[in-house]
Amino acid sequence: MRVIVPATEGRAVRVGAGRRVRVTDLEGGQVGDVFALAADDADDADEHLSASHTRAATSRLFPVAGETFVTSRRRPILTLVEDSSPGCHDMLVAACDPERYRALGVPVHASCADNLRASLAVLGLSVPVVPQPVNVFMRIPVAGDGRLSWLSSISRPGDAITFEAEMDCVLVVSACPQDLVGINGHHPTALAIDLETEEMSDR
Image (cartoon, rainbow, N blue to C red):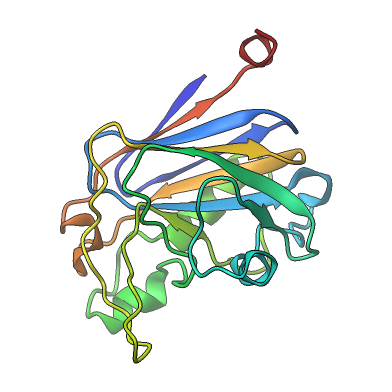
């Protein structure tokens, strides 16, 4: 099953334990904010994929294939199983939100935080706070002095990152609408979510 995430928007899908889900950059150069909520806790969305807990579990700033993301309760939720992109993904930067754009001088602007809320609302869900996402295809290198650089994504058309669900979860992908900082080349584009069906997983 394929779900298109239009430029600047978000979409949510339910992913069963053991299923794989792929996020594809359709045109290249587009960052995707990936959130995951534990399905058995989705009514109040208290347990979610946690970048900070994952960094503690993996002792890495940035994810690589074979590593598992954990939740705010330190339970495995997703494993990164395949990555055909150059491998630049971020786990340091918060989701963009209306306050971020107001600080940049734009009082009304789409944001990943609002995309998360809107995508979950379609499923009848909500979050009390916006978790820090895993920012796939986002290139934020850290200099020796600790300074971050906001560089354009170098993912190519068709590059993809694939996760396997370690528990039943709700996955949300936002095609980041940031066009004031150059992470998307100042031109946000669409992403795709490909969800493995039961028939595909049994082949």
